[in-house]
Image 1: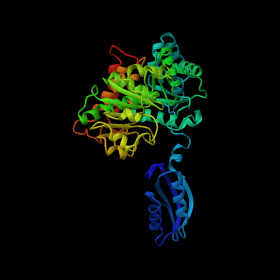
Image 2: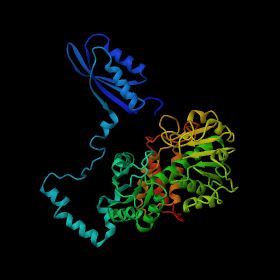
Image 3: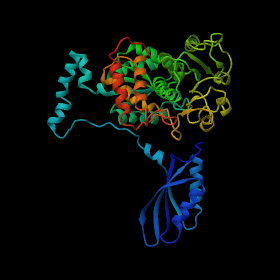
Image 4: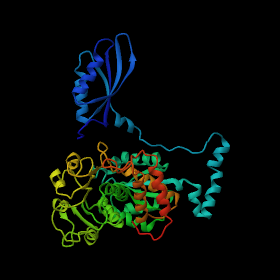
Length: 467
């Protein structure tokens, strides 16, 4: 449950009230007493005896919204006509659409855009397949592919329920990078079927964005598609998160005056995001890391290591620590959590080194309460929008794909991810940098262009290490 009213749970209540008297002030008073916030009050229609008004209210959650509506209904001489959930209203009919870039006003334009003129373009591509990027939408298109198995923090809710999220992702691609992205929600969670389906639809796209596919299946899907396809395959839950974490950590370390090669890092989460963050941090120079999952520290002596955990054991935990997360956090300089809510307390953060950095990124409830963490850590970041330093993948993936598409890249490398992280960190100027500002706003006008430029440049460089 949200701790404070949020626009994501806002409602608009249409009320009929007497034209005279104190009804309007009563409405505001009742909402405030119930813990809501009136964000707008608009007169819909006015008469001599009654007014019809729309009151927009920020609430904490669905139950809170219902209780506020009930309280409004209890006001004498006030009638409720309709209560609308503004988030659901935004999603009615979907959030994206396809539009033609060319006019179709007459027979001439139709004959060029479609038959018979289009046949000449098709034959040109058949003779020279490389022309498909120049002459079709492929040059600017991305498939956002999910199997619905790990959607946000909601779990395995299936392809239909995943569609609003994939639509939102497509809208963000367009808004922040001008990229045409298409939601592809697959009604299968079989690895072979996912790989084959993406392989056979790939000719229409310039890149593949894998989204909300659970671990460990996501690792195999990504690896196999990268072998099969000649376009970039990017798993945002892994690589987008890793870019944002490295960018934020780069700036947080500047704030506290520490070096990435000298700090001790404790991580919670060894799944898709955790593994990708780990690899990028190591690539950036981190040397002393301990990764914990629900069984505790990952080390070579455990008997449950799959391929991914074995890689982690071989590249981290140089002292062979075999305890739990609380022990790993003790005397650490940095904590990075991409795991589960409420697994640490402020007392645990107090055992970290001075000028500690805490990234508690579980969403919507972080691994440790941000207010408790801030009592002991110098820099705190979360995945939430109601605290400073929100680590949000929107900072990364639009610019990354803009750069990949512009470079006509055939893959994604660690060098590209590191370049994107560096560019993102540098959007925050030295004058702006501080404990409460280590990453820019997603609406900062330079975020996408800087990240895209860095990726585009790195796409032409060598050597390249597969991400």
